[in-house]
Length: 388
Ligand SMILES: Nc1nc2c(ncn2[C@@H]2O[C@H](COP(=O)(O)OP(=O)(O)O)[C@@H](O)[C@H]2O)c(=O)[nH]1
Ligand SMILES: [Mg+2]
Image 1 (cartoon, rainbow, N blue to C red):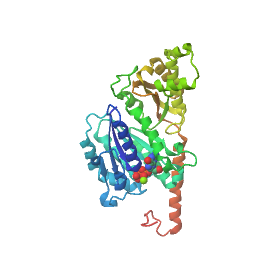
Image 2: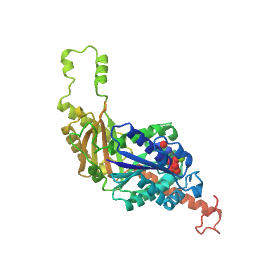
Image 3: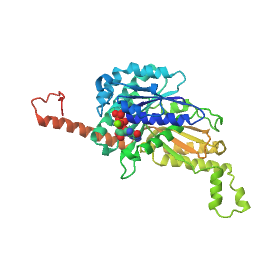
Image 4: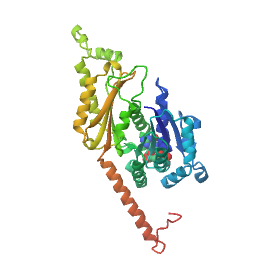
């Protein structure tokens, strides 16, 4: 699938920068991307998005210093400068694009406020679907971040055609700060969404046993709402792995050597096990997978390892485990020593993290109102004070 990424704010920009880096290393180019921010230094820090594709907005308001955690201002400057954002997208070329993907951290200011505004305008202008990858803050970042994320997300789900969630708090390690975890987390994001969004692209290794095309991704995401993604990777396949096996497996008899060649049964068993691992392992948004309306199963790996029966059987297994009956899927060959499995759980009905986030946001809002009331009832007529 040909994807046009828009990285909004700091997190969004960094992640899109990594998608572009990943794409540059591959034989087929499927990704295009720009970065939008109110903070000049954040844009300067990017490495792979071309300079002309980095757009500074809100200059008359914040002079390139960013909007901080004020997502209302983030939304306002985006609306005010929507024409220049659309121009930047258009000038990069959109005629061959299959989908737009907006990436943003939802807890901050620029991406949090800007992403929903941009989604609305892109949807009005283009026929192609507009998806979002929204990053949830960890609770340790403070209640303002949760409050921002709740407001942004509840707006975003109504504007984007589907919103993928990545939860920072589910992915950072115990005792590790969110900041220390960023590069590892971003790597996780780019790896799984890279496999997903590259599906349907025909590279020099031809097509898969069961071809997936962009329309199958689009149909899976048609229900809207929030989606979560599972991912698993196989053990290393290929000459080196075999050598290692020999090294550590002791002396090998002739009989054992012939058994190294996988039979069709083994291949499909391997694929099924991998897909199970992807769905039952850590998801981008931990959630009850049985509440998903639709799903997409994708396998990418060396052509010799792909197996139609394995894909069919894993699709049936996923179908038995989700609430809906629509499970699409297939495989595509890549030059790799690993097989990767991606399971998209689309339009999920239940995620405790989202419920918690909305609770925190409600409590935070009540606290804000209460603390204002305490100071002076004389001026308590809903006017925001100039200084807090
Ligand atoms: N996963 C991830 N999250 C990030 C990264 N940078 C910032 N965040 C998170 O994204 C949220 C918004 O921060 P930021 O992107 O700096 O805000 P903005 O620049 O105003 O849009 C916060 O919850 C941050 O913890 C990153 O590189 N990776
Ligand atoms: Mg920041």
